[in-house]
Amino acid sequence: MIEFVDVHKTYEGGVEAVNGVNFYIDKGEFVFLTGPSGSGKSTLLKLMIREEKADSGQIILNNYKVVTMKDKHIPYLRRSIGIVFQDFRLLPDKTVYENVAFAMRVVRSSARQIRRQVPILLSLVGLSARAHNYPNELSGGEQQRVAMARALANNPLVLIADEPTGNLDPENAWEIMRILNEINMRGTTVVVATHAEDIVNKMQKRVIEIDKGRIIRDQKHGSY
Amino acid sequence: MGRLFYLIGQGFENVLKNKLMFIASVFIITTTLIMLGIFTIVGENANALVEQMKSEQRMQVWLDGDLASDKTKEVGEKLKKVQGVDEVVFRSKKETIDNMRELYFDESTIALTDGWEDTNIYATDSYIVTPHDLTMGKKLQEDIEKIDGVNRVAFQEETFTKISKIADIIKVVVLIILIFLIGLSFLVISNTIKLGLHARRKEINIMKYIGATDNFVKTPFVIEAIIVGLIGALVSWLVTIALYDIFKSVVMSNQILFEPLTLDRQILTMNVIIGTIISCFACLSSINKYLKV
Image (tube, rainbow over all chains, first blue to last red; front, top):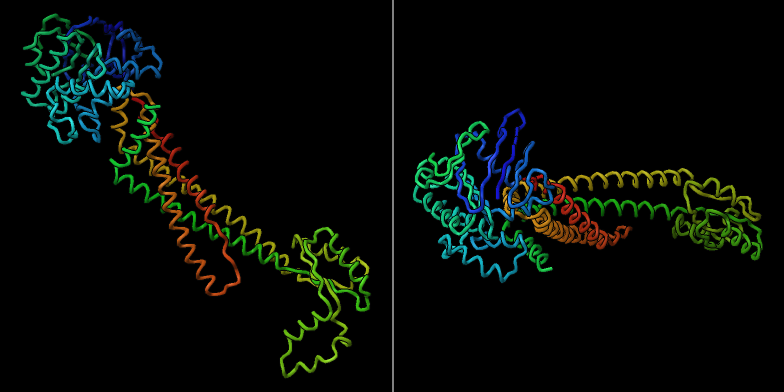
């Protein structure tokens, strides 16, 4: 499902963000990426979605060879992945409904499919009543739930979340993790980069710990 | 096709959702194109005025005093065939004398001209010749004087040359300033569109993260840029033509001997082309950097 094979990434200025990383994530797994700030967690996620390009090695994700793929195929890679960001990244001039629908428009879903699917997704994240609100009318937790609904719009096999609870209070943070867990229970592979120690400790999922661009720990039911 | 309509609809929706930016962009484009339109009108009319002055320059070809009428006609035919002659109009001796009486004599002195038809050796039959090229006046004079029956050719060589030079200078100056203003319009309109895109760069980034292709992201923005350019072009055209109509009515009411040109269609075409093409081009050229995520 997701495989990193001897991946290296050095930024301009000589910073070795990822240094010979190898791991494999199977279908249906729930994995936390942990490590201190600057350890390379976010870089790993950026490499997965080709926001950054690895200098060497290979990344296989949903059968896409991410490192060597042509730029024009990047949109198709990203459509097969659900992505959730720390800062939500909702389209500010579209309603909740339109934000989720937009992800389906991108893959040429019909109006009928959109009308059927979006309410289901909003219901999944508990925001059916907020369909016609704009992002600036929502709380942080609600915005993140919209982002998750959008990430699920095209039934991705993999959902990647970069610090999804970073801007949320504990109550909302747990709500987000509950939804992520539920998504994972339905068969979606989930990869979460996080600093949230108590969440990692409580959920006891697989933990891949990174420091200075290297994997220092890979534990099946790990703690922070 | 449905997807294309959706994207075009998104373009229109973007205009409605970003009203302030839309109004600001239209205002800037309108102002720029009004300046360009006004200068174009000034330039075109200046050129037309000078061309009119050029076309009013004539040569008077005086014939020999004792020329028979058939010979007079023969000279006229020969004049028409001379290279560089646009028009030839006969003026009889009587017309010339009447003209002189009207210009130079009043009621108290008109009696001095009694008998001129027989005694005035200076007024003969003549032809008024309009030259094609004022700068070739001297050569034309030499060619005409070779014709049998022609006594002398009168024309103001210095005036011919000056008017011709002025016409050329005006043409060049108008062209240079027009090119400069078009370049300036390009810069201003282009930067206006780029600023609008820069303000929405996060939105563009987000669409790319979700998996939108470059064309899917670009199309609504291009539509928006075209709408902005088109509306700016139309508003500036209406304002420019309204101002020009006021100017024309002033000219007409003051009986100034010059008829301003009708330039409505030219100004509209220029505005639409410059407004929409530059907006579209500016959008396409500057959106790419926000698509690289």
